[in-house]
Image (cartoon, rainbow, N blue to C red; front, top):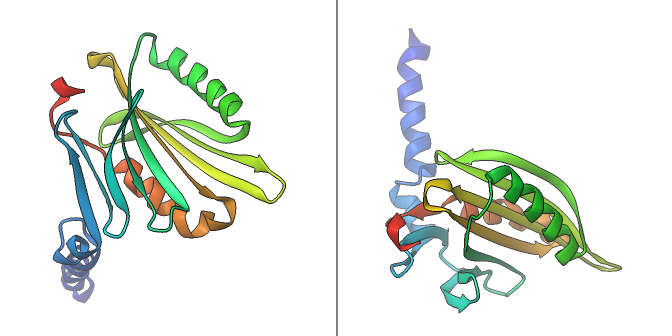
Length: 176
């Protein structure tokens, strides 16, 4: 009987202190919105986000000291999701001269995604790279999120890179 009465209080406390809708979360995170392309994402308050129009890159957010960053890219989907995924993973490894540790299809907020983790670099300069490709098959579009940090910062930064990538929200799909 006591356990059942404590559980709702415990869940409320977790939501209050850790939940994305809590007042405490708002103190540590900011939402960046690209109104021209109809999407937004959440990032730590001290990271710097801005529009960055270069080819398919539409925005980016960077760690305060520049040691890590996340770029958002929008591209056309001209093949099947399976064909795109295979070609993209192969091309990423070649372009980055890296080794793919994992390439997995996952679902994020109800959207099918390709999640890639890889490492690259040589000698003392090694990097952890994280990519998340959101598939919008009905729109014939993909949003590619590419991020990375120094390999030695993996344990400190990787969860933040994953959080930012998985916080993507589509506000107006007709603008993608």
